[in-house]
Image (tube, rainbow, N blue to C red):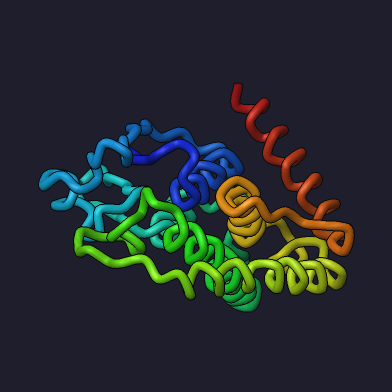
Length: 214
């Protein structure tokens, strides 16, 4: 297998951190988004929207969605489980991961892609021109702090975003917070002590996983 990725981009990082936590080693190929490599005819033949990450399977097929890639790998490499172990826990992890993406990551992307000049006519992924909308940038900036407030409430009742165990929901939330701090300069504040403690725990865990593979 080969993973086409871009260091620093949030969606690829959702997969690379997953690989790190699972202890899975896959050849990785950097795609230069600034140079437009993701919009070349060759790459678009593999990834319809011209997005990374992109997983090339042994048989020559391709998976181009972060959740689909991790679902495939979870079935191939079930231990340690990061997407639940029972019907109930799998559903809970999925719904909270989807919540993180919908309420958190998309809010940051909405603000970032509609605000900064580098995304002029590319406010959405894909090859079709999409104009920036200032009101969407403002909405994204307003939505993200609500996400942090709701995440604080969630983590006051459970140790991990997806419930009782570390999962992809934690990875997605961590990536969202990293992206927000860099792209729109919003980080957890004084009212998010539980989130900050959780963030430190997850970073420590992932660093231990990384060292274990070194």
